[in-house]
Image (cartoon, rainbow over all chains, first blue to last red; front, side):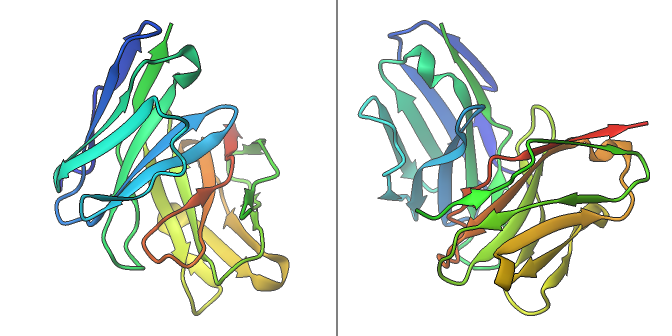
Length: 114
Length: 114
């Protein structure tokens, strides 16, 4: 089990550029979550998918953020255009559709927007 | 809104001393309770969880936590801290979704002194 894989580990971009973060969940997991971690706001749930379908995107900050899950093994989080306040660590996590199944986190993508 | 409170931002403990990290949550449906640990540059790792039954739960790395419904608390404990326990600890609550839609506390950073 390779765990949840996120890429890139670090991303530095200029304000106004498009940023795409990628996630490969653990095989067989039904749920995929995108979280954002900042010093000021801690860990915030942005959006989650069940069986590749977005269920709740109420945590997405604004229309500049979008997420897709075209298949069970891949998801993207896109920011267009990026702004300095988007700088954060973005985590992807996945879990099974079972109450006792733990949430497995990737190692995160540290995004810096200058 | 449902919330999770970790009142201590930082805690310093001497190696070998006991540890207790506090967590309180707002009232809601029967909660599922979790503690996660995050080492620098890493994702979050599950330490332990409470779903039902015995209110004292054992986790990995010698940690335990006790659920006290009357106090809406789920404090994390360890009888003897090791230097390798230095990390950030997050309490998280799932208010009955059963699939790990978690609300996280703001975290407590544990420092271990020699």
